[in-house]
Length: 446
Image 1 (cartoon, rainbow, N blue to C red):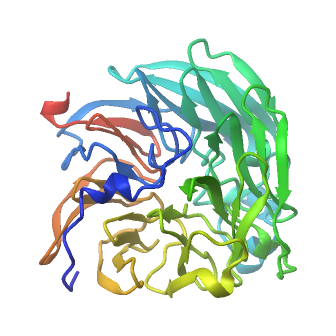
Image 2 (image 1 turned 180 degrees about the vertical axis):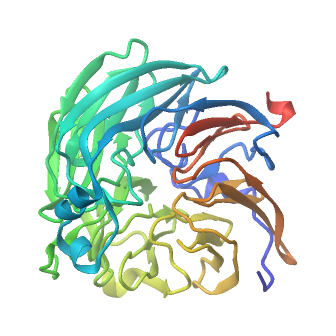
């Protein structure tokens, strides 16, 4: 890593974080209460290992990349228990671009899609709820799972999304399933986007290869409250029309907006009605995974494949604002899977192949970049003045940004792969690998 960077403006963390429609204790959704991977208290463990600072470690059933969500004494996760198909059966099921360019695919003959509850203090697995049984599911990308979307947790309820395989709401006290709803969609490489909950609505991104829309389900009943088709897309190849972005809820000038990136377009919607507020044409991008971030003045997002650009768009427009509100674009190692994290005029990203980047949000200029090592799917976290980068290989690199440049504080390791973005509550990190859930805590927080 090289080049100097300004110090973190720590007092701006809360001021520059968009206010979600609700913000409760714990870590209720993908990327936490701020929606952007910022730990509000700033407290998180700095170092750990299999024999260091592990409060508990619990084996998990199945395979899934969804993040843990935490509230009260409970940690909830989703998982997929798979009966795997053979390599030949998986290859035969591959479709579209995946088959054309030889993407490595995975296929299950049968799925049991489940929600799992772990006791937050002891790590005991206290409840497993089967939500859907699926025969002959479609193949998925080998880097994906059948349970990648992160659920949303609020007092008494858990909202689960498995893409085309179903949506469900359950009572967290009893495990009783309150409703189920299936919205068929052709993902091609599996489900990816996580839901958000706003004012009694569960908002879903449904950007498939066959159809593209955003919809909201009533959280009490699962019935459709609104459904809005995406703007027209130039691409005719179905592979270039799909996307996997999790919406971001923010407020601007007293109005709540839900912004979500899809193929060709970043669009902002009125969360109560689904009406489109504004849109930006970002080009030919598709298969977009990173969740947008915002500092309250601009929204920043990745355009996905094939160009892999980072955009900054000024908030406050109406209609098509492509020509008037795009502040800058950057080609600097833009990730296609990990989401950005930002604070105090700095945005931190890590490319899929392990290059960490810090950009100045004023103009998109490079502050520093450097190779971290490893490959990346999980999104980074910001805790206090430290940025955490989680590699698929099970390593976490912790960096502090300072006037003299980024300072590498250390590398922590656990067994297994890290694909899911962690949660942090009360100084304890809940880290999911491909086989286990860890509670990581330094002695003062246990």
